[in-house]
Length: 108
Image (tube, rainbow, N blue to C red; front, side):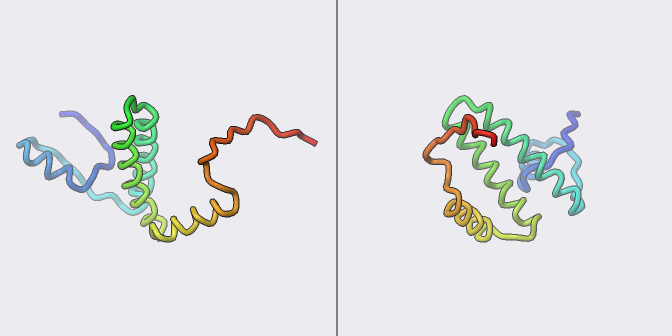
């Protein structure tokens, strides 16, 4: 039996049950959950970086977005608050749409 030891979406146990396979799960403690959300975000970012098509990239970005929602809750905040912070940073320092790549800055 393969061992996964990773955070999965809430509906995965039901999906596995429908296949007739046996499995085991447990509910993570709050501190464990925060660690696992970060691990899963890293995993999904790696998968996004490895995506070969736009469709695959969008699938991975959707997973990242879902995990951002989870991480926001872990931090005791909301998506609205995150968006407010994002907008404030964009107003102060700009976004990334101009594709500016900084090469160097003179050191005094």
